Image (cartoon, rainbow, N blue to C red; front, side, top):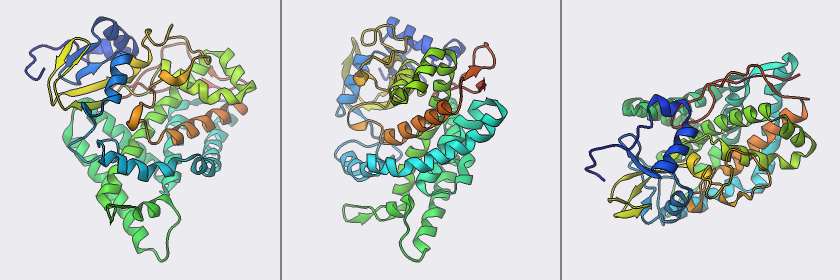
Length: 381
């Protein structure tokens, strides 16, 4: 409640950050709806997370800072979602796939020639950010700047540093605005996504620079999660040689494997909602205006829905997997994220005989809001 004088847990406690998955599993079993000063009310059980996703009238996505379309509720969300969904159709993804594959291949070339890599810094980080730049029509050479925004925002969120977050937002807005101004000044219509966004109309008006910055901020942030996901998938394959070999023989299973690996070991900790009325969840009464954190990792590992959640089983039905959310706010960029991860795995597996860990020591992890790896040394004999 708003006047609550105790906390059930501390998401930034070292014991939690040491192994976020285990800590969230324990919270789901002990206190499935828990309060902290850092995250507000956290929902850990699959049933409660899914109910919050479905009940958009009670659990609002609206944010103080304009965020298109994630930070909107219907009917405004509906308008923008219908406007933006066409950029992620199967046809658009198929057209982009050769570019994505070329970027992955170029990055893997020197890695495979050498036979070993620090996978996070040499592939998992640059690949999705370079692919995003190519998809947007930004200079691919700017990928590290884009990566800086994603990591900077994650760090600012963890430290609750609003000034740092605001500075990053200003820098990102200036970058996007410069590109938009250049597209407007160009002679003749452009054929990249930035030019197309300038032509979008809502309510009889073209999108403003601020609107475009808002929606691109969301797309950019999502690629930090893709980078984290690639590291997690590579780690799992390097420790599960049977699955690794099976995917070489049956590459059609790669997408299913990615989703199942990331169900068991999710790259993103949580997303937020705000209550619009008093509501009871698992016996806890939560007042209106409270922050709600939907704990994706805990929900996807709920044994009431997923028996033996640590086990990666390609036979599982994916319907209960909330890796990309669910309902009207299911991740807009899911098709692009899955395309890039599939391409990365196809290239990596088809061009290697084996992926092995260089060390048996535990791999260092990021902290909230990420659950990715800080580093991952592998050999590719």
